Image 1 (cartoon, protein in one colour):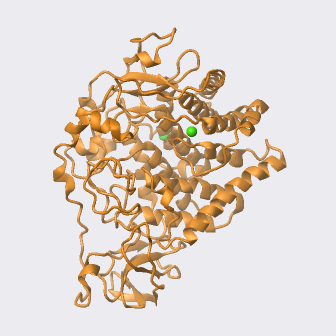
Image 2 (cartoon, protein in one colour; image 1 turned 90 degrees about the vertical axis):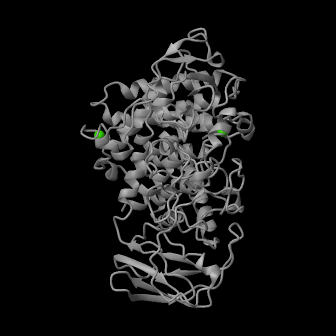
Image 3 (tube, helix red, strand yellow; image 1 turned 180 degrees about the vertical axis):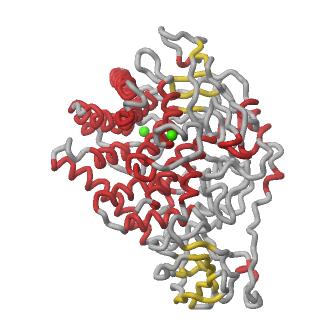
Length: 589
Ligand SMILES: [Ca+2]
Ligand SMILES: [Ca+2]
Protein backbone atom coordinates (compact mmCIF):
# COMPACT_ATOMS: atom_id res chain seq x y z
CA UNK A 1 0.00 0.00 0.00
CA UNK A 2 0.91 3.55 -0.40
CA UNK A 3 2.81 6.05 1.69
CA UNK A 4 3.61 3.52 4.34
CA UNK A 5 6.32 5.66 5.79
CA UNK A 6 5.19 9.10 6.89
CA UNK A 7 8.75 10.37 6.63
CA UNK A 8 8.55 9.75 2.92
CA UNK A 9 5.27 11.61 2.82
CA UNK A 10 6.72 14.73 4.36
CA UNK A 11 9.76 14.65 2.12
CA UNK A 12 7.86 14.09 -1.09
CA UNK A 13 7.14 17.26 -3.04
CA UNK A 14 5.05 15.16 -5.42
CA UNK A 15 2.78 14.08 -2.63
CA UNK A 16 2.47 17.63 -1.40
CA UNK A 17 1.19 18.46 -4.86
CA UNK A 18 -1.20 15.53 -4.77
CA UNK A 19 -2.62 16.63 -1.45
CA UNK A 20 -3.34 20.15 -2.60
CA UNK A 21 -6.80 20.60 -3.95
CA UNK A 22 -8.52 17.71 -2.27
CA UNK A 23 -10.63 19.95 -0.06
CA UNK A 24 -13.57 19.72 -2.39
CA UNK A 25 -13.88 16.03 -1.69
CA UNK A 26 -14.38 16.55 2.03
CA UNK A 27 -18.14 16.49 1.74
CA UNK A 28 -19.10 12.97 2.68
CA UNK A 29 -21.78 11.11 0.79
CA UNK A 30 -25.03 11.84 2.54
CA UNK A 31 -27.38 9.07 3.39
CA UNK A 32 -30.53 9.39 1.36
CA UNK A 33 -33.19 9.30 4.02
CA UNK A 34 -36.88 8.86 3.62
CA UNK A 35 -38.01 8.55 7.17
CA UNK A 36 -41.70 8.60 7.79
CA UNK A 37 -42.24 8.29 11.51
CA UNK A 38 -43.14 10.92 14.02
CA UNK A 39 -39.78 12.34 15.04
CA UNK A 40 -41.12 14.49 17.88
CA UNK A 41 -39.64 12.30 20.59
CA UNK A 42 -36.25 11.90 18.95
CA UNK A 43 -33.49 13.76 20.73
CA UNK A 44 -31.20 15.95 18.70
CA UNK A 45 -28.32 13.61 19.46
CA UNK A 46 -30.21 10.58 18.23
CA UNK A 47 -31.21 12.43 15.07
CA UNK A 48 -27.53 12.23 14.23
CA UNK A 49 -27.07 8.62 15.31
CA UNK A 50 -28.61 6.22 12.86
CA UNK A 51 -29.54 2.65 13.55
CA UNK A 52 -26.60 0.63 12.23
CA UNK A 53 -27.43 -2.27 9.97
CA UNK A 54 -25.86 -4.47 7.35
CA UNK A 55 -26.73 -2.14 4.46
CA UNK A 56 -26.80 -4.90 1.85
CA UNK A 57 -28.84 -7.23 4.00
CA UNK A 58 -28.92 -10.42 6.03
CA UNK A 59 -29.13 -14.01 4.87
CA UNK A 60 -32.20 -15.85 6.09
CA UNK A 61 -30.22 -18.25 8.27
CA UNK A 62 -27.70 -15.69 9.60
CA UNK A 63 -27.74 -13.96 12.95
CA UNK A 64 -29.51 -10.64 12.36
CA UNK A 65 -28.75 -7.80 14.71
CA UNK A 66 -29.01 -4.03 14.36
CA UNK A 67 -27.26 -1.53 16.66
CA UNK A 68 -29.67 0.99 18.21
CA UNK A 69 -28.39 4.26 19.70
CA UNK A 70 -29.26 4.93 23.33
CA UNK A 71 -33.03 5.10 23.77
CA UNK A 72 -35.40 4.63 26.69
CA UNK A 73 -37.43 2.13 24.76
CA UNK A 74 -36.99 -1.53 25.60
CA UNK A 75 -38.63 -2.94 22.47
CA UNK A 76 -38.17 -2.78 18.72
CA UNK A 77 -40.29 -3.58 15.69
CA UNK A 78 -39.35 -5.04 12.34
CA UNK A 79 -41.41 -3.24 9.72
CA UNK A 80 -42.11 -4.64 6.28
CA UNK A 81 -41.39 -1.82 3.85
CA UNK A 82 -44.16 -2.60 1.33
CA UNK A 83 -46.98 -2.67 3.87
CA UNK A 84 -45.40 -0.44 6.56
CA UNK A 85 -46.68 -3.04 9.03
CA UNK A 86 -44.91 -4.70 11.91
CA UNK A 87 -44.01 -8.29 11.11
CA UNK A 88 -41.85 -9.05 14.12
CA UNK A 89 -41.01 -7.45 17.43
CA UNK A 90 -38.62 -8.12 20.24
CA UNK A 91 -36.90 -6.82 23.33
CA UNK A 92 -33.84 -4.67 23.00
CA UNK A 93 -30.71 -5.85 24.80
CA UNK A 94 -29.34 -4.19 27.90
CA UNK A 95 -27.28 -1.04 27.34
CA UNK A 96 -23.80 -1.56 25.90
CA UNK A 97 -20.74 0.58 25.22
CA UNK A 98 -17.63 -0.03 23.12
CA UNK A 99 -14.55 1.79 24.28
CA UNK A 100 -12.88 1.56 20.84
CA UNK A 101 -15.73 3.58 19.36
CA UNK A 102 -16.63 5.86 22.24
CA UNK A 103 -19.93 6.87 20.68
CA UNK A 104 -21.99 6.45 23.81
CA UNK A 105 -24.47 3.81 24.82
CA UNK A 106 -26.34 1.53 22.45
CA UNK A 107 -28.52 -1.55 22.44
CA UNK A 108 -28.94 -4.57 20.18
CA UNK A 109 -32.11 -5.38 18.26
CA UNK A 110 -31.83 -9.09 17.56
CA UNK A 111 -34.24 -10.44 14.96
CA UNK A 112 -32.34 -13.60 14.13
CA UNK A 113 -35.49 -15.64 14.64
CA UNK A 114 -37.22 -13.87 11.77
CA UNK A 115 -36.29 -15.32 8.40
CA UNK A 116 -38.99 -14.34 5.90
CA UNK A 117 -37.44 -12.97 2.73
CA UNK A 118 -38.30 -9.38 1.94
CA UNK A 119 -37.46 -5.73 2.47
CA UNK A 120 -37.63 -4.34 6.01
CA UNK A 121 -36.60 -1.63 8.41
CA UNK A 122 -36.15 -1.43 12.16
CA UNK A 123 -38.39 0.92 14.14
CA UNK A 124 -37.64 1.97 17.73
CA UNK A 125 -39.28 4.79 19.61
CA UNK A 126 -36.83 7.63 20.16
CA UNK A 127 -34.72 7.21 17.03
CA UNK A 128 -35.23 7.45 13.27
CA UNK A 129 -36.26 4.29 11.46
CA UNK A 130 -33.33 2.41 10.02
CA UNK A 131 -32.80 2.51 6.29
CA UNK A 132 -34.47 -0.39 4.55
CA UNK A 133 -32.55 -3.62 4.06
CA UNK A 134 -33.11 -7.04 2.58
CA UNK A 135 -33.48 -10.39 4.23
CA UNK A 136 -32.90 -13.10 1.68
CA UNK A 137 -30.58 -15.58 0.14
CA UNK A 138 -28.53 -14.79 -2.96
CA UNK A 139 -28.09 -11.24 -1.62
CA UNK A 140 -24.27 -11.17 -1.78
CA UNK A 141 -23.78 -12.56 -5.31
CA UNK A 142 -23.37 -9.18 -7.00
CA UNK A 143 -21.11 -7.96 -4.23
CA UNK A 144 -18.92 -11.04 -4.46
CA UNK A 145 -18.62 -10.72 -8.21
CA UNK A 146 -17.86 -7.05 -7.93
CA UNK A 147 -15.18 -7.53 -5.28
CA UNK A 148 -13.46 -9.99 -7.63
CA UNK A 149 -13.96 -7.89 -10.73
CA UNK A 150 -12.15 -5.10 -8.88
CA UNK A 151 -8.96 -6.98 -9.78
CA UNK A 152 -9.80 -6.66 -13.48
CA UNK A 153 -10.30 -2.93 -12.95
CA UNK A 154 -6.81 -2.80 -11.40
CA UNK A 155 -5.10 -4.61 -14.28
CA UNK A 156 -1.95 -3.02 -15.68
CA UNK A 157 -1.01 -3.20 -19.39
CA UNK A 158 -4.51 -3.51 -20.84
CA UNK A 159 -7.31 -1.22 -21.99
CA UNK A 160 -10.58 -1.71 -20.10
CA UNK A 161 -13.23 -1.77 -22.81
CA UNK A 162 -16.74 -0.37 -22.47
CA UNK A 163 -18.45 -3.73 -23.04
CA UNK A 164 -16.71 -5.12 -19.95
CA UNK A 165 -15.87 -2.07 -17.86
CA UNK A 166 -18.97 0.07 -18.64
CA UNK A 167 -18.45 3.68 -17.59
CA UNK A 168 -15.14 2.85 -15.94
CA UNK A 169 -13.58 1.99 -19.31
CA UNK A 170 -10.10 3.39 -19.72
CA UNK A 171 -7.06 3.33 -21.94
CA UNK A 172 -4.23 0.89 -21.38
CA UNK A 173 -1.46 2.09 -19.12
CA UNK A 174 1.92 0.77 -18.02
CA UNK A 175 2.65 -1.73 -20.78
CA UNK A 176 5.89 -2.38 -18.88
CA UNK A 177 7.55 -3.94 -21.88
CA UNK A 178 10.72 -1.91 -21.35
CA UNK A 179 11.30 -1.73 -17.64
CA UNK A 180 14.85 -0.89 -16.56
CA UNK A 181 16.88 -2.74 -13.96
CA UNK A 182 17.62 -0.28 -11.17
CA UNK A 183 21.11 -0.16 -9.73
CA UNK A 184 19.75 -1.77 -6.53
CA UNK A 185 18.62 -4.82 -8.52
CA UNK A 186 21.59 -5.22 -10.87
CA UNK A 187 23.27 -8.59 -11.32
CA UNK A 188 25.97 -10.04 -13.54
CA UNK A 189 23.19 -11.35 -15.78
CA UNK A 190 21.29 -8.11 -15.93
CA UNK A 191 23.45 -5.06 -15.21
CA UNK A 192 21.98 -1.70 -14.22
CA UNK A 193 19.94 -0.22 -17.06
CA UNK A 194 19.10 -3.55 -18.72
CA UNK A 195 15.62 -3.36 -20.27
CA UNK A 196 13.27 -6.25 -19.47
CA UNK A 197 9.63 -6.96 -20.24
CA UNK A 198 7.49 -7.24 -17.12
CA UNK A 199 3.97 -6.75 -18.40
CA UNK A 200 0.55 -7.50 -16.90
CA UNK A 201 -0.12 -7.81 -13.16
CA UNK A 202 -2.43 -5.80 -10.93
CA UNK A 203 -1.76 -2.33 -9.62
CA UNK A 204 -1.07 -2.86 -5.95
CA UNK A 205 -3.37 -0.26 -4.45
CA UNK A 206 -4.33 3.35 -5.09
CA UNK A 207 -1.00 3.80 -6.85
CA UNK A 208 0.38 2.11 -9.97
CA UNK A 209 3.22 0.09 -8.46
CA UNK A 210 3.50 -3.70 -8.56
CA UNK A 211 5.04 -5.27 -5.45
CA UNK A 212 5.93 -8.96 -5.12
CA UNK A 213 5.42 -9.22 -1.35
CA UNK A 214 1.87 -7.93 -1.48
CA UNK A 215 1.07 -9.70 -4.72
CA UNK A 216 2.09 -12.98 -3.10
CA UNK A 217 -0.49 -13.02 -0.32
CA UNK A 218 -3.22 -11.49 -2.52
CA UNK A 219 -2.71 -14.11 -5.24
CA UNK A 220 -2.58 -16.93 -2.69
CA UNK A 221 -5.83 -15.75 -1.13
CA UNK A 222 -7.68 -15.74 -4.47
CA UNK A 223 -6.27 -19.16 -5.39
CA UNK A 224 -7.43 -20.43 -2.00
CA UNK A 225 -10.84 -18.94 -2.57
CA UNK A 226 -10.99 -20.90 -5.82
CA UNK A 227 -9.78 -24.12 -4.19
CA UNK A 228 -12.20 -23.85 -1.27
CA UNK A 229 -15.22 -22.74 -3.29
CA UNK A 230 -14.63 -24.29 -6.69
CA UNK A 231 -18.31 -25.10 -7.29
CA UNK A 232 -19.12 -21.41 -7.00
CA UNK A 233 -16.28 -20.34 -9.30
CA UNK A 234 -16.75 -22.97 -11.98
CA UNK A 235 -19.83 -21.12 -13.19
CA UNK A 236 -19.02 -17.54 -12.20
CA UNK A 237 -18.92 -15.19 -15.21
CA UNK A 238 -17.02 -11.99 -14.36
CA UNK A 239 -17.40 -10.32 -17.78
CA UNK A 240 -13.66 -10.12 -18.32
CA UNK A 241 -11.79 -10.57 -21.62
CA UNK A 242 -11.37 -14.31 -20.97
CA UNK A 243 -14.98 -15.03 -20.01
CA UNK A 244 -15.67 -17.05 -23.15
CA UNK A 245 -12.81 -19.52 -22.72
CA UNK A 246 -13.13 -22.79 -20.81
CA UNK A 247 -11.26 -21.64 -17.69
CA UNK A 248 -13.00 -20.34 -14.55
CA UNK A 249 -12.80 -16.55 -14.68
CA UNK A 250 -11.16 -16.30 -11.26
CA UNK A 251 -8.32 -18.44 -12.63
CA UNK A 252 -8.02 -16.18 -15.71
CA UNK A 253 -7.88 -13.17 -13.42
CA UNK A 254 -5.25 -14.65 -11.13
CA UNK A 255 -3.17 -15.74 -14.12
CA UNK A 256 -2.97 -12.10 -15.21
CA UNK A 257 -0.96 -11.45 -12.06
CA UNK A 258 0.97 -14.72 -12.03
CA UNK A 259 2.21 -14.05 -15.56
CA UNK A 260 3.63 -10.76 -14.29
CA UNK A 261 5.09 -12.26 -11.12
CA UNK A 262 6.97 -14.84 -13.19
CA UNK A 263 8.82 -12.03 -15.01
CA UNK A 264 10.17 -10.69 -11.71
CA UNK A 265 12.78 -13.43 -11.32
CA UNK A 266 16.41 -12.96 -12.29
CA UNK A 267 18.41 -15.78 -13.84
CA UNK A 268 19.95 -16.89 -10.53
CA UNK A 269 16.54 -17.45 -8.92
CA UNK A 270 16.54 -14.13 -7.03
CA UNK A 271 13.38 -12.03 -7.21
CA UNK A 272 12.98 -8.29 -7.67
CA UNK A 273 11.19 -6.67 -4.76
CA UNK A 274 9.01 -4.30 -6.79
CA UNK A 275 8.32 -2.61 -10.10
CA UNK A 276 7.54 1.11 -9.77
CA UNK A 277 8.53 4.56 -10.87
CA UNK A 278 11.16 6.15 -8.64
CA UNK A 279 8.56 8.37 -6.95
CA UNK A 280 4.80 8.20 -6.63
CA UNK A 281 2.66 8.62 -9.74
CA UNK A 282 0.59 11.80 -10.00
CA UNK A 283 -3.15 12.07 -9.52
CA UNK A 284 -3.70 10.79 -13.05
CA UNK A 285 -5.04 7.94 -15.16
CA UNK A 286 -2.79 4.96 -15.91
CA UNK A 287 -2.02 5.99 -19.50
CA UNK A 288 -0.98 9.45 -18.30
CA UNK A 289 1.76 8.07 -16.07
CA UNK A 290 4.43 7.59 -18.70
CA UNK A 291 7.52 8.00 -16.55
CA UNK A 292 10.19 5.33 -16.66
CA UNK A 293 9.54 2.29 -14.47
CA UNK A 294 12.17 0.14 -12.83
CA UNK A 295 12.55 -3.20 -11.14
CA UNK A 296 13.96 -2.21 -7.77
CA UNK A 297 15.81 -4.17 -5.09
CA UNK A 298 15.88 -7.86 -4.29
CA UNK A 299 14.87 -9.34 -0.96
CA UNK A 300 14.52 -12.62 0.91
CA UNK A 301 10.87 -11.79 1.61
CA UNK A 302 10.15 -11.37 -2.10
CA UNK A 303 11.96 -14.62 -2.94
CA UNK A 304 10.15 -16.72 -0.31
CA UNK A 305 6.75 -15.15 -1.09
CA UNK A 306 7.38 -15.75 -4.79
CA UNK A 307 8.39 -19.36 -4.10
CA UNK A 308 5.25 -19.96 -2.01
CA UNK A 309 2.87 -18.35 -4.48
CA UNK A 310 4.36 -20.08 -7.52
CA UNK A 311 4.22 -23.44 -5.72
CA UNK A 312 0.51 -22.92 -4.99
CA UNK A 313 -0.08 -21.76 -8.55
CA UNK A 314 1.67 -24.83 -9.90
CA UNK A 315 -0.54 -27.06 -7.76
CA UNK A 316 -3.74 -25.36 -8.89
CA UNK A 317 -2.76 -25.16 -12.57
CA UNK A 318 -2.08 -28.89 -12.82
CA UNK A 319 -5.81 -29.25 -13.36
CA UNK A 320 -5.57 -26.88 -16.34
CA UNK A 321 -2.68 -28.71 -17.99
CA UNK A 322 -4.68 -29.21 -21.20
CA UNK A 323 -5.37 -25.48 -21.52
CA UNK A 324 -1.92 -24.31 -20.40
CA UNK A 325 0.52 -27.11 -21.29
CA UNK A 326 3.71 -26.98 -19.24
CA UNK A 327 2.60 -24.00 -17.15
CA UNK A 328 2.42 -25.84 -13.84
CA UNK A 329 5.87 -27.32 -14.29
CA UNK A 330 7.36 -23.99 -15.31
CA UNK A 331 6.03 -22.24 -12.21
CA UNK A 332 7.20 -25.05 -9.94
CA UNK A 333 10.68 -24.73 -11.37
CA UNK A 334 10.57 -20.96 -10.75
CA UNK A 335 9.40 -21.58 -7.17
CA UNK A 336 12.22 -24.03 -6.47
CA UNK A 337 14.91 -21.74 -7.83
CA UNK A 338 13.60 -18.79 -5.77
CA UNK A 339 13.63 -20.99 -2.67
CA UNK A 340 17.17 -22.17 -3.39
CA UNK A 341 18.40 -18.60 -3.89
CA UNK A 342 16.79 -17.41 -0.65
CA UNK A 343 18.08 -20.36 1.34
CA UNK A 344 21.69 -20.07 0.22
CA UNK A 345 21.81 -16.26 0.53
CA UNK A 346 22.16 -14.44 3.88
CA UNK A 347 18.85 -12.85 4.85
CA UNK A 348 18.45 -9.85 2.58
CA UNK A 349 15.94 -7.27 3.79
CA UNK A 350 14.68 -4.77 1.25
CA UNK A 351 16.56 -1.48 1.56
CA UNK A 352 14.97 1.55 -0.04
CA UNK A 353 17.53 3.19 -2.37
CA UNK A 354 18.11 6.90 -1.81
CA UNK A 355 16.56 7.85 -5.19
CA UNK A 356 13.35 5.83 -4.62
CA UNK A 357 10.24 6.86 -2.66
CA UNK A 358 7.60 4.34 -3.80
CA UNK A 359 6.20 1.91 -1.21
CA UNK A 360 8.67 -0.18 0.78
CA UNK A 361 6.94 -3.30 2.02
CA UNK A 362 10.03 -3.82 4.12
CA UNK A 363 10.10 -6.94 6.30
CA UNK A 364 13.21 -7.96 8.23
CA UNK A 365 11.70 -11.09 9.73
CA UNK A 366 11.41 -13.73 7.00
CA UNK A 367 11.04 -16.73 9.29
CA UNK A 368 7.32 -16.77 8.52
CA UNK A 369 7.88 -16.31 4.78
CA UNK A 370 10.27 -19.28 4.79
CA UNK A 371 7.76 -21.35 6.74
CA UNK A 372 4.97 -20.56 4.28
CA UNK A 373 7.12 -21.32 1.23
CA UNK A 374 8.26 -24.60 2.80
CA UNK A 375 4.66 -25.69 3.36
CA UNK A 376 3.63 -24.94 -0.23
CA UNK A 377 6.69 -26.57 -1.77
CA UNK A 378 6.13 -29.66 0.38
CA UNK A 379 2.50 -29.93 -0.70
CA UNK A 380 3.35 -29.47 -4.37
CA UNK A 381 6.46 -31.69 -4.53
CA UNK A 382 5.87 -34.04 -1.55
CA UNK A 383 9.61 -33.67 -0.88
CA UNK A 384 10.19 -34.21 2.88
CA UNK A 385 13.06 -31.72 2.90
CA UNK A 386 10.51 -28.93 2.74
CA UNK A 387 8.48 -30.40 5.59
CA UNK A 388 11.64 -30.43 7.68
CA UNK A 389 12.14 -26.75 6.79
CA UNK A 390 8.53 -25.97 7.75
CA UNK A 391 9.02 -27.62 11.13
CA UNK A 392 12.31 -25.80 11.67
CA UNK A 393 10.59 -22.40 11.69
CA UNK A 394 8.88 -21.92 15.03
CA UNK A 395 6.31 -19.30 13.97
CA UNK A 396 2.84 -19.96 15.34
CA UNK A 397 -0.33 -19.41 13.39
CA UNK A 398 -1.80 -15.92 13.51
CA UNK A 399 -4.21 -13.91 11.39
CA UNK A 400 -2.31 -13.44 8.12
CA UNK A 401 -1.12 -10.10 6.76
CA UNK A 402 1.44 -9.15 4.11
CA UNK A 403 4.35 -9.18 6.54
CA UNK A 404 3.18 -12.14 8.62
CA UNK A 405 2.34 -15.16 6.48
CA UNK A 406 3.03 -18.25 8.58
CA UNK A 407 -0.73 -18.87 8.81
CA UNK A 408 -0.90 -19.41 5.05
CA UNK A 409 1.34 -22.46 5.44
CA UNK A 410 -0.79 -23.85 8.26
CA UNK A 411 -3.97 -23.27 6.26
CA UNK A 412 -2.58 -25.00 3.16
CA UNK A 413 -1.38 -27.98 5.20
CA UNK A 414 -4.71 -28.30 6.96
CA UNK A 415 -6.51 -28.18 3.61
CA UNK A 416 -4.20 -30.47 1.63
CA UNK A 417 -1.93 -32.26 4.08
CA UNK A 418 -4.08 -34.98 5.58
CA UNK A 419 -2.75 -37.77 3.37
CA UNK A 420 0.81 -36.46 3.35
CA UNK A 421 1.41 -35.88 7.06
CA UNK A 422 1.51 -38.31 9.96
CA UNK A 423 -1.74 -38.45 11.90
CA UNK A 424 -0.07 -36.72 14.81
CA UNK A 425 1.46 -33.95 12.69
CA UNK A 426 -1.83 -33.33 10.91
CA UNK A 427 -3.68 -33.17 14.23
CA UNK A 428 -1.23 -30.54 15.46
CA UNK A 429 -1.86 -28.41 12.38
CA UNK A 430 -5.62 -28.75 12.80
CA UNK A 431 -5.39 -27.90 16.49
CA UNK A 432 -3.58 -24.66 15.68
CA UNK A 433 -6.16 -23.60 13.09
CA UNK A 434 -9.15 -24.48 15.28
CA UNK A 435 -7.48 -22.91 18.33
CA UNK A 436 -7.10 -19.60 16.50
CA UNK A 437 -10.62 -19.81 15.09
CA UNK A 438 -11.99 -20.29 18.60
CA UNK A 439 -9.97 -17.32 19.80
CA UNK A 440 -11.66 -15.27 17.08
CA UNK A 441 -15.08 -16.61 18.15
CA UNK A 442 -14.25 -15.59 21.70
CA UNK A 443 -13.41 -12.05 20.51
CA UNK A 444 -16.77 -11.93 18.77
CA UNK A 445 -18.65 -13.23 21.80
CA UNK A 446 -17.07 -10.53 23.94
CA UNK A 447 -17.60 -7.71 21.45
CA UNK A 448 -20.34 -5.18 22.22
CA UNK A 449 -20.44 -4.49 18.45
CA UNK A 450 -20.56 -8.15 17.44
CA UNK A 451 -17.29 -8.06 15.56
CA UNK A 452 -14.06 -9.94 16.36
CA UNK A 453 -11.91 -6.80 16.34
CA UNK A 454 -9.62 -5.96 19.24
CA UNK A 455 -7.68 -2.77 19.77
CA UNK A 456 -4.56 -4.44 18.33
CA UNK A 457 -6.47 -5.14 15.12
CA UNK A 458 -6.96 -1.44 14.35
CA UNK A 459 -3.83 -1.14 12.24
CA UNK A 460 -3.49 0.36 8.76
CA UNK A 461 -5.92 -1.64 6.65
CA UNK A 462 -7.98 -2.76 9.66
CA UNK A 463 -10.82 -3.91 7.41
CA UNK A 464 -8.47 -6.48 5.92
CA UNK A 465 -7.69 -7.77 9.41
CA UNK A 466 -11.42 -8.40 9.84
CA UNK A 467 -11.66 -10.04 6.40
CA UNK A 468 -8.53 -12.14 6.85
CA UNK A 469 -10.08 -13.75 9.92
CA UNK A 470 -12.39 -15.48 7.45
CA UNK A 471 -9.48 -17.56 6.12
CA UNK A 472 -9.07 -19.02 9.60
CA UNK A 473 -12.80 -19.35 10.30
CA UNK A 474 -13.67 -20.98 6.99
CA UNK A 475 -10.86 -23.52 7.34
CA UNK A 476 -12.11 -24.34 10.85
CA UNK A 477 -15.62 -24.72 9.39
CA UNK A 478 -14.32 -27.18 6.81
CA UNK A 479 -12.40 -29.13 9.47
CA UNK A 480 -15.24 -29.35 11.99
CA UNK A 481 -18.50 -28.53 10.18
CA UNK A 482 -19.37 -26.37 13.22
CA UNK A 483 -21.71 -23.66 11.93
CA UNK A 484 -20.61 -21.15 14.58
CA UNK A 485 -17.68 -20.32 12.29
CA UNK A 486 -20.00 -19.53 9.42
CA UNK A 487 -22.19 -17.31 11.60
CA UNK A 488 -19.07 -15.46 12.71
CA UNK A 489 -18.07 -14.80 9.10
CA UNK A 490 -21.52 -13.33 8.41
CA UNK A 491 -21.06 -11.04 11.42
CA UNK A 492 -17.71 -9.84 10.04
CA UNK A 493 -19.44 -9.11 6.75
CA UNK A 494 -22.18 -7.14 8.54
CA UNK A 495 -19.46 -5.04 10.17
CA UNK A 496 -17.85 -4.26 6.81
CA UNK A 497 -21.24 -3.49 5.24
CA UNK A 498 -22.31 -0.82 7.69
CA UNK A 499 -22.96 -2.29 11.11
CA UNK A 500 -19.99 -0.42 12.49
CA UNK A 501 -19.50 2.84 14.41
CA UNK A 502 -18.88 4.90 11.25
CA UNK A 503 -22.16 3.87 9.56
CA UNK A 504 -20.21 3.44 6.30
CA UNK A 505 -20.46 0.39 4.15
CA UNK A 506 -16.74 0.13 3.41
CA UNK A 507 -17.17 -1.31 -0.09
CA UNK A 508 -17.55 1.07 -3.03
CA UNK A 509 -20.89 0.77 -4.82
CA UNK A 510 -22.70 -1.21 -2.09
CA UNK A 511 -24.95 -0.01 0.71
CA UNK A 512 -26.61 3.37 1.22
CA UNK A 513 -23.43 5.02 2.45
CA UNK A 514 -20.38 3.64 0.64
CA UNK A 515 -17.04 5.44 0.19
CA UNK A 516 -17.31 7.97 -2.66
CA UNK A 517 -13.81 9.48 -2.48
CA UNK A 518 -11.68 6.39 -2.23
CA UNK A 519 -7.89 6.82 -2.48
CA UNK A 520 -7.60 5.12 -5.87
CA UNK A 521 -6.04 7.04 -8.74
CA UNK A 522 -8.31 5.81 -11.55
CA UNK A 523 -11.41 6.52 -9.44
CA UNK A 524 -10.31 10.06 -8.62
CA UNK A 525 -9.04 10.85 -12.14
CA UNK A 526 -11.68 9.43 -14.49
CA UNK A 527 -14.38 12.15 -14.21
CA UNK A 528 -16.93 9.51 -13.22
CA UNK A 529 -18.69 10.37 -9.96
CA UNK A 530 -18.98 6.82 -8.68
CA UNK A 531 -15.70 5.17 -7.80
CA UNK A 532 -14.81 1.83 -9.38
CA UNK A 533 -17.15 -0.63 -7.61
CA UNK A 534 -16.23 -3.52 -5.33
CA UNK A 535 -13.23 -1.89 -3.64
CA UNK A 536 -12.73 -2.33 0.11
CA UNK A 537 -11.52 0.77 1.95
CA UNK A 538 -8.63 0.22 4.35
CA UNK A 539 -10.87 1.24 7.23
CA UNK A 540 -10.55 2.98 10.57
CA UNK A 541 -7.33 3.19 12.58
CA UNK A 542 -6.20 6.13 14.63
CA UNK A 543 -2.65 6.55 13.36
CA UNK A 544 -3.93 9.25 10.98
CA UNK A 545 -0.54 9.18 9.19
CA UNK A 546 -2.01 11.22 6.33
CA UNK A 547 -2.84 14.25 8.53
CA UNK A 548 -6.28 14.51 6.94
CA UNK A 549 -9.28 16.04 8.68
CA UNK A 550 -10.90 13.13 10.54
CA UNK A 551 -14.32 13.42 12.19
CA UNK A 552 -13.29 11.14 15.07
CA UNK A 553 -10.11 9.86 16.69
CA UNK A 554 -10.76 6.49 18.29
CA UNK A 555 -9.50 3.25 16.69
CA UNK A 556 -12.90 2.14 15.38
CA UNK A 557 -14.10 5.60 14.32
CA UNK A 558 -10.98 7.20 12.88
CA UNK A 559 -12.02 7.02 9.24
CA UNK A 560 -12.70 9.68 6.64
CA UNK A 561 -14.11 9.20 3.15
CA UNK A 562 -11.68 11.53 1.44
CA UNK A 563 -9.10 11.06 -1.32
CA UNK A 564 -6.68 12.67 1.10
CA UNK A 565 -6.87 9.75 3.48
CA UNK A 566 -4.49 7.07 2.29
CA UNK A 567 -4.29 5.86 5.89
CA UNK A 568 -8.00 4.97 6.15
CA UNK A 569 -9.52 5.21 2.67
CA UNK A 570 -7.04 3.63 0.25
CA UNK A 571 -7.64 0.28 -1.41
CA UNK A 572 -5.20 -2.62 -1.90
CA UNK A 573 -5.19 -6.02 -3.60
CA UNK A 574 -4.30 -7.74 -0.33
CA UNK A 575 -7.40 -6.18 1.27
CA UNK A 576 -9.81 -7.01 -1.54
CA UNK A 577 -8.60 -10.61 -1.80
CA UNK A 578 -9.75 -11.64 1.71
CA UNK A 579 -13.02 -9.78 1.05
CA UNK A 580 -13.55 -12.06 -1.96
CA UNK A 581 -12.70 -15.06 0.21
CA UNK A 582 -15.04 -13.93 3.00
CA UNK A 583 -17.93 -13.41 0.58
CA UNK A 584 -17.41 -16.77 -1.14
CA UNK A 585 -17.36 -18.45 2.28
CA UNK A 586 -20.55 -16.74 3.40
CA UNK A 587 -22.30 -17.49 0.09
CA UNK A 588 -21.24 -21.12 -0.09
CA UNK A 589 -23.92 -23.58 1.02
CA1 LIG B 1 -12.88 -17.79 -18.40
CA1 LIG C 1 7.59 -11.66 7.82
